[in-house]
Length: 257
Image 1 (cartoon, one colour):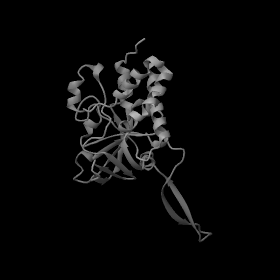
Image 2 (cartoon, rainbow, N blue to C red):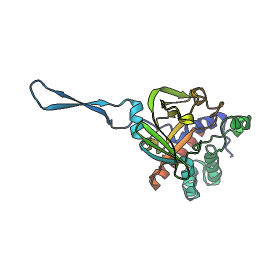
Image 3 (cartoon, rainbow, N blue to C red):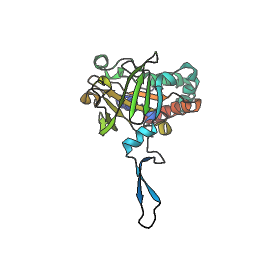
Image 4 (cartoon, helix red, strand yellow):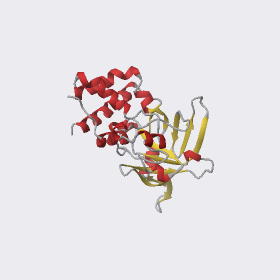
């Protein structure tokens, strides 16, 4: 029997990339923020005291690396069989192909903002653009430094960012807001990072822009129906398989509820 996506499921799926989003959690270990040296009155040897990173600081440590667009990578035709096999486990062979295409299509739109708002006046047509925008083809996260590289290898921007506050995306997804004070940041002034990491969900999710009000909305404003998703540039075949599997599992499990 043909499965029909409900609006609530479609929103849930696209907003979290769902498959890859709901298992995010804290790292099983804690890196040190800094080391301070003190001296015991009875011993002249220095003692080292480590401070724990805050969750927002820990996230920047956990996502260090270079990232490509998630769906550009996992929707490559060479991974079609993985999609089919994972979907078939839930839908049976006859529905596997159409279900895989539905799942991929939900997050591979190429419009966002007002164009998307106008296009999705009928909720059944709603999709999400989960690619990088503003000319970026690779993101590099290096602690408090974030930079973007274009298709020719040219660095488009590089700024230092500081945690501002916990931040909610549409009241559905909670993350951390970071800001740079550089005057030339433009559309890279703010980064809203979700708590996903390569070690927990095999990918990252984030938004960036210059308008906080619009960054908080998913269905209106300059960034409507857009949520960037990245996968490590050095990902191996297992990580890609795991990412697709998680995406399929969580979304199709949700459909059966």
